[in-house]
Image (cartoon, rainbow, N blue to C red; front, side, top):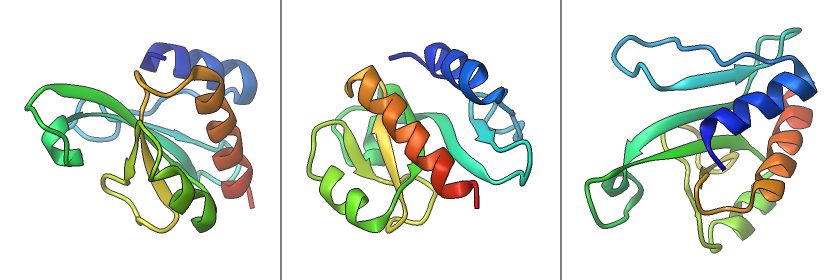
Amino acid sequence: MKREEIFKYVEEKYTSQPEYLWKKYAHYAVLRHSQNRKWYAIVMDVKKENLGLEGKEVIDIMDVKLDPETVDILQSSEGFFPTYHMNNSNWISIDIATVDSKQICNLIDASFDLTAK
């Protein structure tokens, strides 16, 4: 999945638009609820080495909020990492090029629901 596909999905389902909040990190896009303004995802481009992977190439990842049990389970799966820049017990980083698009959409939905409260 590519970041543009994620943005299309959330726009169609939740009418969310990516927000680019930082000049220094111009490609970091926050997705948040229109009602409560809480984040439910952030899409970033980071160096592989920042995730504990070999190489200095930049990849697109997405952080989503999930219940801690799901975070623990997913961290042992390919394409999932301890979160980059968020609370490690409630958020997880996803290599969006590696993980199946249907699973990514399901995780976005779970994060949206969890942060709606």
